[in-house]
Image 1 (cartoon, helix red, strand yellow):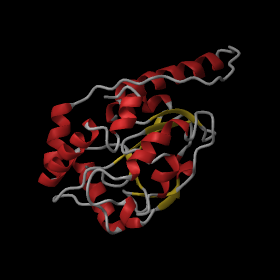
Image 2: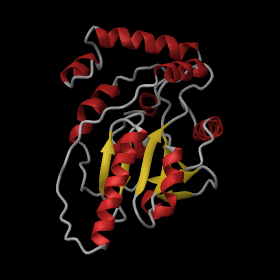
Image 3: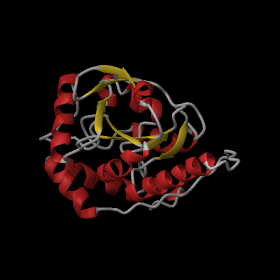
Length: 172
Length: 66
């Protein structure tokens, strides 16, 4: 996502990372109990991933996170009028790039004088799953994060927790 | 939701089911986005999300270290 931010900055596209609650807390990086701790872990994130985007931190209650749908790694694209142009419940850089290219093309056609009329559209997204990278991330968080995710997968496979919903939406 | 429930200590949070179930019906494209107050990590300043949106579109990715 940082590569997209860099590539499109000169075309007027801004990129923000909004730091929310810890998705997979572990011994090394536990759940937030104070705002100072949340800021400190956001700084570790910035350094670990060399994040060049502007990082905005949500409050400890998760006000922004809740207002946008509370998914752990969702992405929105907002227009200058602050209306939602694109939204996805997971972040996949190629899907975001696809949407940015589409929207920039709309802007370009509008500037050329083409009559543009907005309409509602949906798209089923498909993301590349970095299994090894995700596993390495859990280990970085601490052994508890690894074991809790393993246990959660077992629950999901039995149709518990998110399992039934995943099956309903073809995400088995 | 309490502060402890939101900042859950052990994965997975029970509220995930609700979030995953309702996201598709939540805040559709074309609607006005919320305008929460946020803290800029670099400066420590509090600011509204909308005040950051200057020209063109803005990509907002939500996430965390873990």
